[in-house]
Length: 103
Image 1 (cartoon, rainbow, N blue to C red):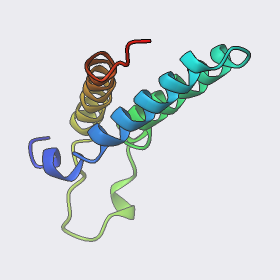
Image 2 (cartoon, helix red, strand yellow):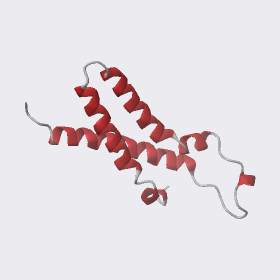
Image 3 (cartoon, one colour):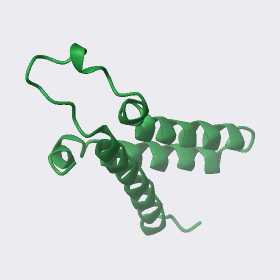
Image 4 (tube, rainbow, N blue to C red):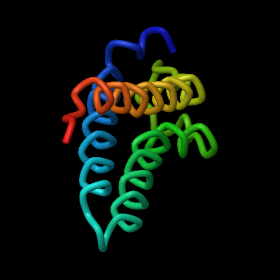
């Protein structure tokens, strides 16, 4: 899992951008607010679960791997992706409060 920290770091800013803009657009929209929130949270959920969450439940068979290569710790990578998505969402909320314009 610790080896995956730098290679999965892209999930943190991606989740932050998705959450920031998705929720910002949902707050500004009068007619599609619920739809935009639902789509934003579904995208965050997909970012957390795909593909490591699926591989944690249904690991690929070792025959598909190159000889002598072991399977990665998919459960640990899933936890790492989930943490990064939550941290990205939390950072987007902090950024929203920090850069809020007073009207």
